[in-house]
Image 1 (cartoon, rainbow, N blue to C red):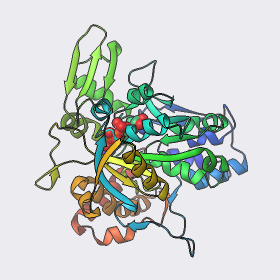
Image 2: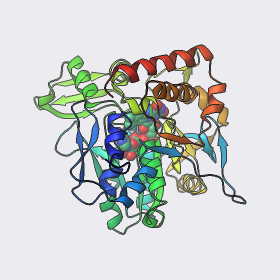
Image 3: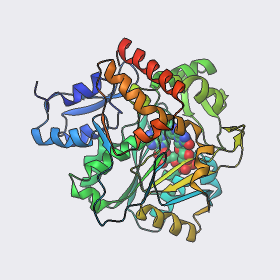
Image 4: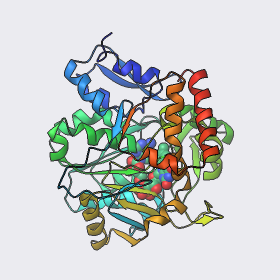
Length: 410
Ligand SMILES: Cc1cc2nc3c(=O)[nH]c(=O)nc-3n(C[C@H](O)[C@H](O)[C@H](O)COP(=O)(O)OP(=O)(O)OC[C@H]3O[C@@H](n4cnc5c(N)ncnc54)[C@H](O)[C@@H]3O)c2cc1C
């Protein structure tokens, strides 16, 4: 098979597929469909080869093949690049001023607040985002949101596979302005794809993301439901969190029974043990390619987040001039309240992401040593972060990845 023809099998077999769905949108209609694999992840099912030009676009934009910032253009003013946190224009903590959005949102409803304001002020025709499927309370589908009610329905994190870019072709064919909300890998892929398709620059008013610790397999959700004692065949609804901060994982059955557990147990003891391999070697847990990124602005205890139930608070990073303008205008319009923070405060709220960025180069090297492939990562300050890492932990992480990459089918 030619290098172009083998791109998708290579990405999938090496455990590098993030499950974003870009390949489905780039291929001719019907050639690729994103499906849940036997391991519980969204993976492309390919019926026919890609054309040479489609394969070239994917080799550049698929986040299983390549993630990186473009080289700085001489004379162009780029935002300051923080080695841990990427491009930073504004650093704030705050929340939606709409009490319902704040409560239903995952942290402070920052993403939903900006999305609802963009819609209601007529700056976009729709928001492309992930929401629970109408047919299955455990599945995530792309939703075209045109009302505040749609945005509220999509609020809250869904710790399960999502492929928002699978529908990108249809989104762009609408010819309307929209904001895109997705995982960091989705946004990295869309940003890069925009270099090949001018409609992205013309129609996508904002790319919004959240910090991401990785996508768990759907099997993680099944395990969580079993632990709760819920019957997944009887589910009426299921949410992972939100409705409070962090809020409870909550399963409601058709017979009225309700099962709940807190974030520490759901994410901390079940879901985070089911992450796909690509997420373990992800260099961009913080959404470096987005205009705006929200995350949990956790309060700390002994240097670590305490996850006690409180009124929601989002960390809000603007990474581009577009993002900064949207955040400040959303604040002026009364959609969002936020206070500026020093960039050094982010590490206290997101210690996991500090560790991740410091470990990733070791994990990538270990993957190569295990004779597996890894994506090409460019201009992400990985070497600089490695030099700041604790050496024993770095080696332990690399060794763990080596063993996993050597022993497992990814
Ligand atoms: C898999 C995953 C891992 C995460 N890891 C971290 C982390 O390490 N640190 C951290 O601070 N925060 C993490 N979060 C994000 C965090 O939970 C909040 O989403 C973030 O604080 C934004 O909160 P908000 O109140 O502004 O979002 P909301 O206003 O609730 O909006 C959330 C948005 O995220 C979208 N969304 C939800 N689930 C998915 C999904 N699976 N795929 C694509 N889009 C989705 C929704 O469509 C909605 O637009 C993670 C979220 C997910 C889904």
